[in-house]
Image 1 (tube, helix red, strand yellow):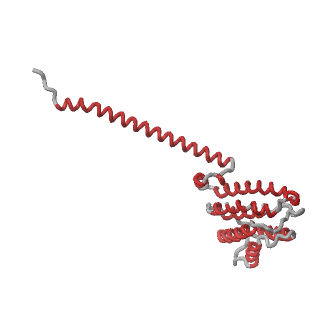
Image 2: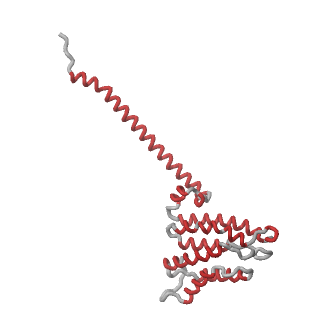
Image 3: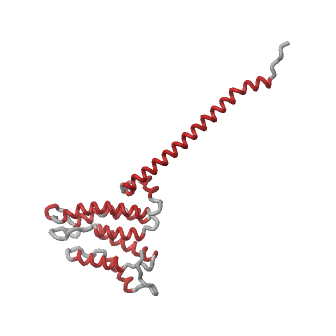
Length: 235
């Protein structure tokens, strides 16, 4: 008499394909996860290489915003950005400066140099948002002010149409105030001497009131120093 196969035996055999399918699915999912993780690691290395390339070539300031915002989060970000702005501004200024020596022929004067500094002054806004940037931004604006004029002879002084002067003066007043609040012992006297000397030299060529508000502010601090505060070398 033939034995009748039990239902449990039939069920066991029937479940084998399902178990195999589940194992294959798990294996495929694991492979996909490992592949995804490997791709993430690869992308992270690519991002690191990209950031290194951008830094090495001083391109942070012109990188897309989505990249720049990640690069300007680490220590020293303010100095990195300021240095790149300074280098770029210097190249523009130097190129125009050479042409001011023969302004009557080239048509390039200090007025043009002043206008050329406006885009770099606009970048100060982003710089000021970074941590520990006040002193760095102040020094950079001082430099951009210096880059805004060239040879004053042979027509190089221009016609006094200098759009950057007001921006430089306003930024210096704001940044000087911030800097003094952060460090009351900041020695601003060398800055005052520098600005007064520049203003006197430029006035001889018809450029009046260069950084006048900043000079007035620093002069008022010199006349009325904070009580019991001795000026020492600050930031």
